[in-house]
Length: 215
Image 1 (cartoon, rainbow, N blue to C red):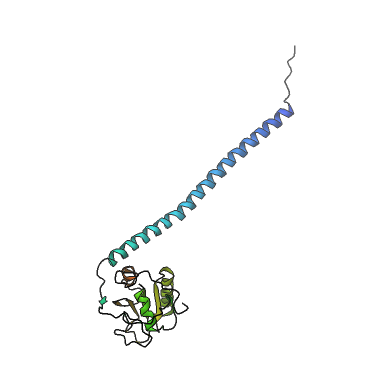
Image 2: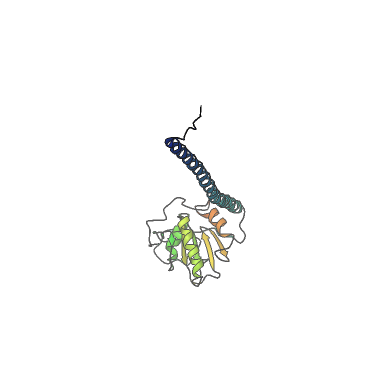
């Protein structure tokens, strides 16, 4: 009796090939998913690590500023016996820029100015807790831009040019003044931390908007 060889079923062959193709597609899909996840993880790490360094660095910088502000700041001059009457006549201030004294009933709106402001209005702002940064009219534009940016961070900061300043920049608060070497002077930020709405302020919390000037 002669045995017969069973011929393959074409349908079975197709099913087997289809199954193999699906298996290969699934393996390829898994490989792609692993690659995508790996790349995403690397990208996320590349974004997170620098951001973490920036945050930690800024926290450290703010801690250093706070520490410096809690100590006497080198070069700060203190003035007392300052009048605080409201007057509508010019005042002969000493020193200049002024750090307090009699002043106009209307304060200067805080913010950035490209033209000098009236002393008597600015002194009223100091009474409300403002710090007044007066810069030399020939200060480089890049430094002026830095001062403008500062006013965006500090609502009680008044910045304007001032004729006759002996250096590039002078910081004044009520009864307090500091001559600075420029916008990069490391004493600037501690001065702002110490004296914006500082304990020397006669009327802390009083407005620095709603007065005169369109800063």
